[in-house]
Image (cartoon, rainbow, N blue to C red):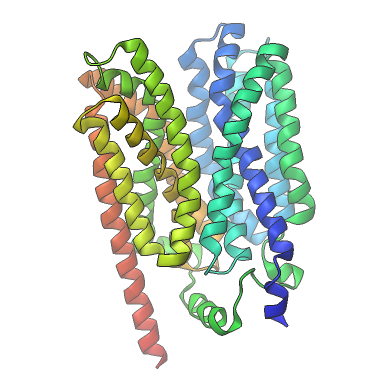
Length: 431
């Protein structure tokens, strides 16, 4: 009976659609549009660019607080209520920002930072948790990849659309439309559709095979840890280093045009280099979309170990191409490969956390670890700028990225080794 039910897509498809909408609405239509709003707001208000963008540092700090709190609430309290509140925080913040034309700078800082209580939990915790719970291990990766790819798909659609809206209607009206878009894409799902686990609807995960998954579920249950237990393990802190290493990518994404201009100085005209830098940003976004789906498919076919390690190597090569022989083709190819690092953060890392610590406290553990993603996001763009200020080049900063890949590889294989030893010990004890 259970197999018959779960061989039909049914409710799991609604969960997938809802997660795609959440990624496109609650993240892509908010965080990835900040650069679209920045210049019009600065021109209208007269704020300094650095003063205005300081809210992103505050956002990162606020996310450090919000993620563990909201992750724990999602796991322990009513899932629909918690996720609906998170979505409403985003909508309210955008509406308040629409009324900011005559407000002082702290108004922007407050409402911009408050977004962290909605965006971060939905993007970093809700979607990976739902996709992991509603899809079986044999197909979980590909569907998580599809859902997270909609951050890139959404950005591809929203950026030109909202640029046009701002130009024609102004940024205040655009924020109202933005808030309505987020509400339409998230609230129907958080209120009516989302359920934390298939068992809440009397179902099993999509793709469930009783002969395979029941045994895997028993093994996973024995290996599952509480948040407190996980935080006392070496594997937890190695996971923290992995996510920190790849979250450094934020500092490269926001400085890509400058990287291109400085790396090609004396070889390519600065104006042409700026255009190439713009292409690097777009190509990195394409790599972002493709890589998330590819990571998920490869994970389901060849396993997490081979897939994760391959993407670390790909990211390393992307960095290397920027400094080996900087010319337009290699810079653009490097940008595509660099863009693929997003798959590790959005797809690979949730799969790694579930593999290392099990399902029991997946949401709280993941949210606690994603704090390191927020920390990196809050500081890396500024750190990259200081590297350039001190050295006159981004080469040293790019080398830091390559070193981070090496650190991530060592930590990842250490986590896999710890997990294998733990599984072997449990298997021996059960004999």
